[in-house]
Length: 344
Image (tube, rainbow, N blue to C red; front, side, top):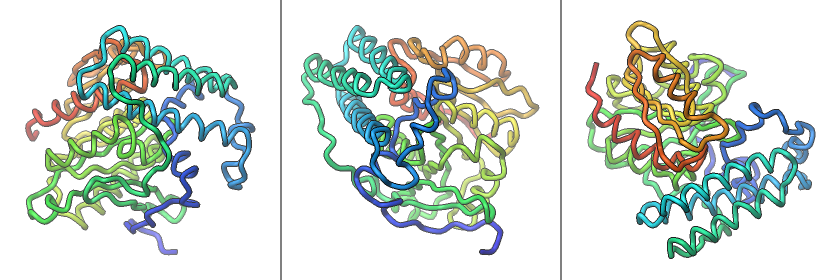
């Protein structure tokens, strides 16, 4: 295998292509609690994931993934119709975040039951029927959605989802880029299949942006993948280098802040959702930090402090939201803010 930057398509399905596999790959990002609260059991969580053999741990992960997707769909549907009262929003977010801690404390059945009870609560309170998750499509309904891999080096190949609307590509107009970085425990599917039913992909296309959603971890470790990605995008598409934006959730927000610090002149603006860190390097891009008022994992006060330590930073807070369910509203606000930014 030769070295160098390579961009190549992947199959429509990843790994074994089963529904269970896709569900595992859409596993919720709030697994950041693993690193923060230190209650996970690495050996238990690793069982069955490499061999493909079903185990109680892998079955529990799948059950939680299904519960999360039911919640994501129910929350997005009810919220888009304006049918979530303040009290219901607070109750659902608190229950969901407590369920996350329950799961990583080994109380698997209790976690799933708590999430599903909240889905039912939403259905009753909003009048929107509870969704069922019986299958997950290999690719989303977004035009131009594809699975790709970026070969940075022989030992670093990064899977990603790329949504480049055909109409945008055919227009020959320079395209902006939205690099969307998921939280710990999630993967490249989060911003396309979840996080508010992939609202980031839809809004990005409306703003003339190509959405690139990679596995986040390599971007946490260095800026090399970012450099490689931009090189390939410039080679494959007509890219407006003055409109390269980065958005991240939780761990992804931390990675976004690191990229802003390492490559300030290459990024037009950054949105950090429920996370991030202060950036004070010369020429730092404008940064919007959005905290969640009820977040028990990365408290809003920490996000506010990061914004206050950033000369180009701005802080906003979402009332009634917790760590993960805040992403839908965070993306809505974040994309609107990005649309207001002018080339530097």
